[in-house]
Length: 486
Ligand SMILES: [Fe+2]
Ligand SMILES: [Fe+2]
Image (tube, rainbow, N blue to C red; front, side, top):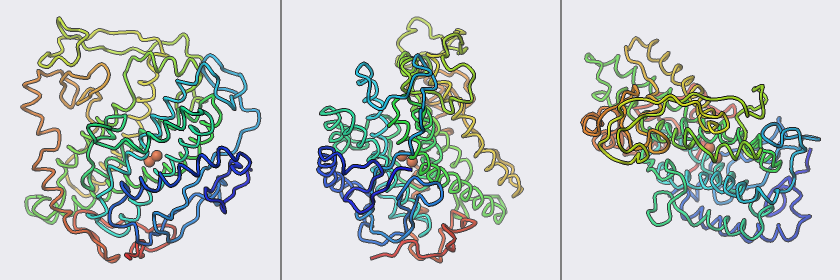
């Protein structure tokens, strides 16, 4: 296993000290990262002691250390999963060749773009979640928010390490730019749509960690297959941390649903809002919103970029080994492409309703985004099933569901067109008439935020709209003082 150095300014298992130039460059980037963290990281909690997990090695058993730390003193490090001896490339045109330890010249731009796009999402989510601490439902949840935030910061480090170590001057410039863009800033926005959306309440936060972090999981799984070995190794270790982010999302949503049903049962009219809870139709609307935003992150259904990534062996499928044909040269993926009269190639043309469908046999490589999205949809459904079991067990008749993947999309073949949550085409007018039944309205948002006006800083308390978790973290009780306010 690679030796870990935790005593240096930048903890790492990549023998950073042996490359003075790289070490100096990263040490010069570090204070800029900290400036960014202080400016855009969790507001109002930087001086508090938080009970956090810190990655200290890639050892399965003891990879993380738990203790109190003030967030600006968190030890953000660079950790790559151990090298697999004689690893060969598992897919694409370079199938069977030894994995690359250096970036092949002809793939440099493509790889840089992938690393930058992944890297950009990490600080973006910290920016989106910056104010949430001030409305936390419990100290337990507050700590989980900060855990997610510091680890997204470490994921930024993971990508910046690659940029600095393998992409020369361009890479260093990209690393600077990653600290300059800001989520939601009209002049210098983050690269991908969902990462510019406001995440202004805890229902959104749990939807974000359930759906948007799960997109992250699938992107990381696809990149973990990369022929570029350092990218594969860094993303493999990121997945270890990512699992907790989705745990936060899934358990957060389960606890909301559990509490809502409890409150409904207490009310003669099963009115959750009357009892100060989040009613299930509102949960469904936020689900529709964050699911559709997250689906967009996978890119177009029919994509020549996706085909190039796969052909070049830079980005595979999630769990590539589970497929039989790793070249994917022969297969097709059948997609029903919406037909719009007169302006078939102008999807943004408002007012046009879909009049029919054209069945297209897309060469498999060009459908790789859709293949990855399929895995994501199935994985997303699993948690929804759990939520429905909680609802059913409580005796409430309501079912949460994922909307059609055509619903509310802004990239790919459905962009600019209008579909209901079941995927049926609608005119723009009909869609607008019914929009408020499907997506959160200003008054839903105001209601949800009204429940969260006062943060809960007493470890013994839990906000009224969410159930307590079944257990605490790392063997600690639920009411442990996970955050010590300074
Ligand atoms: Fe991440
Ligand atoms: Fe994450």
